[in-house]
Image (cartoon, rainbow, N blue to C red; front, side, top):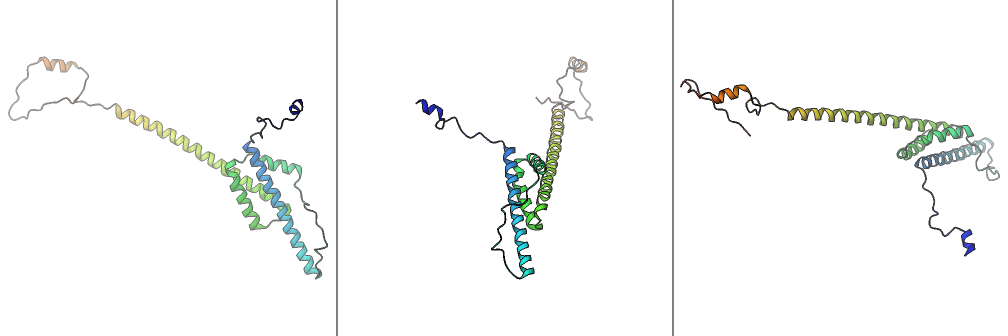
Length: 197
């Protein structure tokens, strides 16, 4: 039993920690960048082989062994790209990848141009996020102002004045009640007031 305490494999509370969504976005986007770099390098190598084959007329590509991955992003540029990736909201991760793939397919950049293209896609997504935040902020302000104006409208509508059906006691009403009702002349119609309760 003492030996089992050294090995904590069977303990149920040891589980993989939940990952931060920002870290997942950074990892996903950087994996996509690395994959596109490898693809661009592969395509560039194939183009060079085709050019060499056309130029010399002989195909030696089966003899040549290429290193798996020549081009690497500089550490400073990688940190800058990771920092930019960390500002991307998780809901934008998929659209950023799709846009990046679309631009790579459309322009067929060299390996050195891929990080710049990636940076432009990230900046485009950041600007779009800021625009949407501004739009939400303006919509929220508009809804708040609208709600306030509606509450004032309902307040005004509740405080209506009915001049003929008033519960406010006035001196003239007391005088009129004590006075004897007078008969009107036949030429004038008699108006009666009724109180609606």
